[in-house]
Length: 373
Ligand SMILES: *Cc1c(COP(=O)(O)O)cnc(C)c1O
Image 1 (cartoon, rainbow, N blue to C red):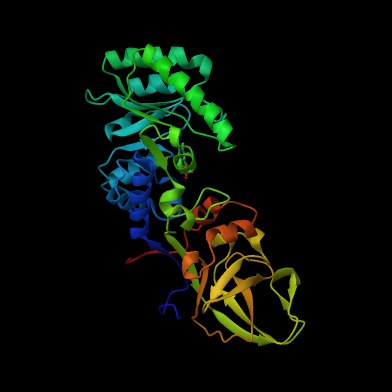
Image 2 (image 1 turned 45 degrees about the vertical axis):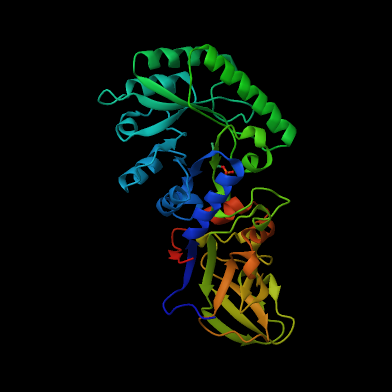
């Protein structure tokens, strides 16, 4: 198969797959979905991912930081938006003015949320409590103080506590159950302080699938909505999910070479016989991990090949033997393995990382193009 003329490299985004993945996870969990589109929608495009997720029944959009939330609001997303990682000391005024819900991880952030109320509208906050991940989140010894201050600010109309949340380590089911037990202790203390948040959420995709008691009627779904499995021992297809991204390029040069030809920087690879080399115009600037040099898989004309030698900034080489390959032929790095493509997981394994990183790091130089279902 040839790529359309003029296409060097692109990431095809199957928006319908995102919608269907959200719909599937909503049915599976029986819970409200906070669709997580941080980091430009894990590389898929934050706005299109948000719209596709809302189409699939998500009720709220989650991002890491306020700038990501503001960009979505300005682009016309009207659904509730939620951001939880903040610049130290930053003002929340603009966020509150644009109706961005704030994750609050300490007393200082709570006070700043209380000061940010705009035009009589209280800041909507989700109190994040530490339950064992050791990142941010209100420390257990601060729970009483922060909860009672939140209740006071709520009574005077400065904040509205719409959620209490935490995040799991996915170390083991037992570790996650222990964190969940601590979460319930926190919820009980919050109730005792007079808080009655409509939302409680702790599960991301992994626990939403594997730990039903962690669903609590509201789950934060990131990787699963993109059709990538967070579980080491189960594929996306096993989970009823469809990968939304296909990364591909057009064969940009073809040459016939004799046995013993060195390939790419450092000659880590030398041809063993007369063979054909095909040049693939994607490199580590495009998110193809250099770590996968000599190991990463591609599919050309339905056949599997492996990267020959080092992956460079813009390109790598594949030894295709005597297989007929022509300029412009499609090279698929990863896509839907049920359709014969390598998977993001294959690249993750080749680079000693996780598939989250493979999709999220696809570079800004790679155009995203939406495909029809
Ligand atoms: C990224 C993130 C998520 C989504 O996690 P997935 O494993 O991609 O589903 C949920 N909650 C928080 C706090 C996150 O940072």
